[in-house]
Figure 1: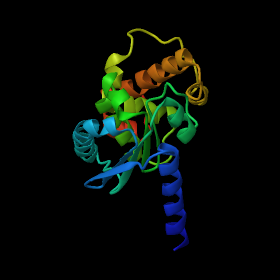
Figure 2: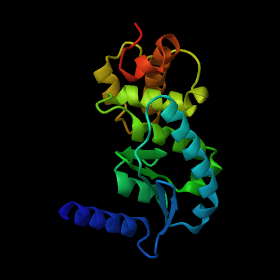
Figure 3: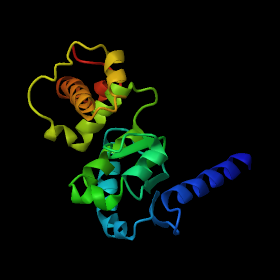
Length: 207
């Protein structure tokens, strides 16, 4: 009973943070619940649901079914996203367990990042427990297709240890962060190509 009360209080706080001056809207799609406060975001729900359904199907094929219930909280703007997550305003989304926090859905759609972002975060809801940060990000970017937009060539970070790469992924400098994401994706993608998803998910890295 206590845990249910705490969860209700947390949800109430999130709704207040999302929309301090108006009531946030909530839409259910199977086990996915999307909460948003910008009315324009309603127009993006179809794209969100299609991306989620495709990602859930592909995750199940990898033996990684997402949680039965997942919540998406779309921020009302970049500042609101930072207030909700503590993340930098240039981050598209952040996932904590079965809860996904995103930038405003319309902003993601206008920048062409909405389907990929949903797919990326879907992976995080299903990733094996204890997956190192760099590997989780690299695999999520490979799974989502974000890796296709990475610049070719070396990142200059090839000599970093796994722990050093993890630390670099906490950077708030966009240039340093982007290079770290690209390096994490290069390493994870190499394992997927050479050994397959099963080995990558088990952390059996390529030499």
